[in-house]
Each structure stands twice: as structure tokens, then as C-alpha cells.
Image (cartoon, rainbow, N blue to C red; front, side):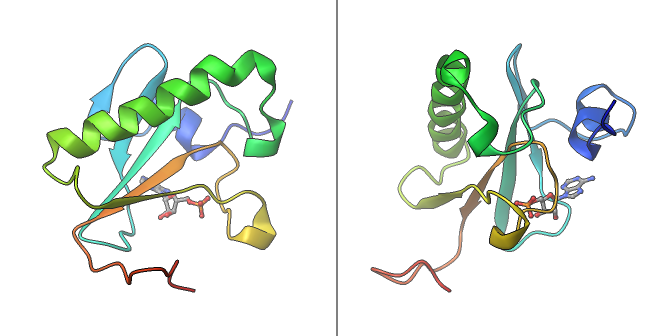
Length: 116
Ligand code: AMP
């Protein structure tokens, strides 16, 4: 069996971590090495290693993550300006192989630029 990701261990309560939000499908935590003043991770409880591993069966789950990202941003008062990022694969910078969405806010995002 593949080794469980650090996010599975957080979700299962093995690594004490404050949940900014949680429901039966996902959790939201603060990134341990923030790259913006607000840097959250929205993580499905289901362990899907990478976005490309998601299937049609995961469609509602992926939609749920996006809707929750918007709601969480609104609740944190950053609903007007935030950025969502999914790294897919080591070549794209993915380091934790349990699908997650980065939510970044409270920093200046250059117009028309992804910042790389
Ligand atoms: P990625 O590089 O897209 O796979 O993102 C993984 C993110 O998880 C990185 O931004 C890490 O800083 C973050 N991270 C790793 N371990 C933890 C942890 N224990 N708690 C919160 N965030 C973490």
C-alpha cells in the first residue's frame, strides 16, 4: 500500500492541526510555509494523489472544493482578491501527493501575470 500523505495524517488527526474549515468532504488548513499573508490549503478527505488522477466520479467533489474556496475567501474578507493554485506533478512544484488547492490572498497580484 502506498504511504499515506501528510495531509491524510492531518485529516485523520494524527498530526494536530487547526482546521480553518471542515465538512464531510474536505478540510481547510493554513499552509505551514505561507507564500502570502493568507495562504490556505483546501484538501479533500479523499486521497487523490494528483489532479490528473481525478475521474468523472470526483466531479462533484472537485466542484465542492471550488465552491468552498469561494466561501472561505468571502468569510475571511478576501473575497475580492484571491488566487487559487493547484500544482500537478513534481515538475509543476507539487510536493505533497494528495490533491489540494492553494488559496493565496492579502498580497499584491500583478495584473495579467501569474508571477512566474
Ligand atoms: P504543493 O507543493 O503544491 O504540493 O503544496 C504542498 C504545501 O503543503 C506546501 O505549500 C507546504 O508548505 C504545505 N505543507 C506541508 N506540510 C504541511 C503541514 N504539516 N501543515 C500545513 N501545510 C503543510
